Amino acid sequence: MRVSALAERTGVPVATIKYYLREGLLPPGVPTSRTQAVYDESHVERVRLVRALTGSAGLSLAAVHEVLAALDDPPSSRHGLLGAAQRALVADEAQQEPPAGVAARRRVDELVAARGWCDDPVLTDRLAAQLDDAEKAGVPVSPEHLTVLAQAAEQVARGDLATVPEVPADAMRQVVAGTLLTDPVLLTLRRLAQQWASGGAGEVR
Amino acid sequence: MRVSALAERTGVPVATIKYYLREGLLPPGVPTSRTQAVYDESHVERVRLVRALTGSAGLSLAAVHEVLAALDDPPSSRHGLLGAAQRALVADEAQQEPPAGVAARRRVDELVAARGWCDDPVLTDRLAAQLDDAEKAGVPVSPEHLTVLAQAAEQVARGDLATVPEVPADAMRQVVAGTLLTDPVLLTLRRLAQQWASGGAGEVR
DNA sequence: ATTATTGGAGAGTGCTACTGTCCAATGTCA
DNA sequence: TGACATTGGACAGTAGCACTCTCCAATAAT
Image 1 (cartoon, rainbow over the protein chains, first blue to last red):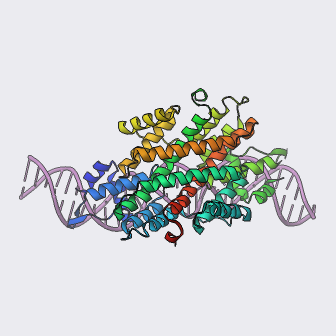
Image 2: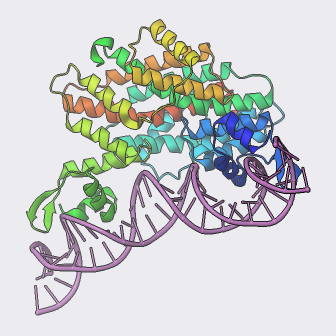
Image 3: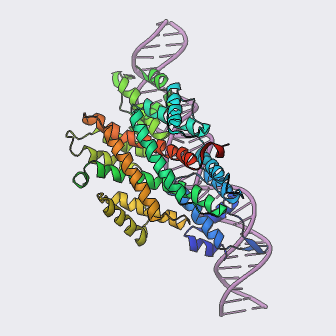
């Protein structure tokens, strides 16, 4: 398969594929001469993955790059696999957060302790900053509301882990790409469920 | 309060506030002369809301504009309020989705029917497109997984509605801004819960 | 009277994700 | 064999977004 065929299979313009190759998002094809190379199914999948991650998942190409690096270097043991997957997920858009208030920090620490979660500093910092943001915007998150969200998150997480296959490389793909791609799904479901919970069909126009 | 004071109160540069004024994200202050106007607390809140929505919630300024328009025009009756809030939420980033496969469409229809949800065409279309995206990326969402997500979404939605105050304007703010700002919170909680569900502290570095 | 600030307007910036153009080397088909 | 299309590689150009800068005459503060 040459570039034009790859472009046709994926629906992505040749110019864009060349760009992805240059940026290292796509491994080079196998050269058959000085000005020719062939691509295979793995390239098709990779392009589709990139498109899905930048599309509905909304990642930047830089974030996609990190995710792909993690997927290409899966730990051989099953132990530590989820840790690696987590690191890839957590780093996906590591915006440096401002300090985050002390009050928010304490609430997060209490939540983590109450639920018996482990205290990942990156994630808890981020969470504290997000709660701070909401508070500053005049829409504070009540402890009860936060608890409900946390319970739902646990339910989701259990469901996520139930789908993980045995093979490490597949497991990585499933956890990392699966989580990133179902993030928007979860948010859409939330809106649908809000309509349902608010009394349903009558409200919708 | 003049611009410089507003800037100091919110931590946003004067130039940016001028920009927001120009773009209509911030209502003009009350002019006291030809080259002077005063701003009040509502302006401070508005700036903070805009920053929160573009920050952790990740909305574009165009999306923020739509959300603010909805907040500034709350329906007087409690009936239809949630409908209006929903419309604002749903339109927040109305990327026009490609057709979305027939299979995905049917799965969504079945899910909506099974759970007794109402069939908002915009949301169900979006959901179908997202499932399609995941499938094309090689990370299909199993029916069981989707069901788990839907159940969690219902739980979240019930919690969301429990926090809604009586006053329509406040209710709008709470539902619309609250949902948008807790979207990222929910996703962060999901990652924390995944670490917890995967065996916890041992996995984390 | 002097200095700082204001609203308003327009131009300029930096970043991201492409997109277009050009090239000589190579492949494809007549 | 020749005409034409395609390829990899390099670089410049573009569009959109969210600011940011500069300028201005008219105030406001001291």
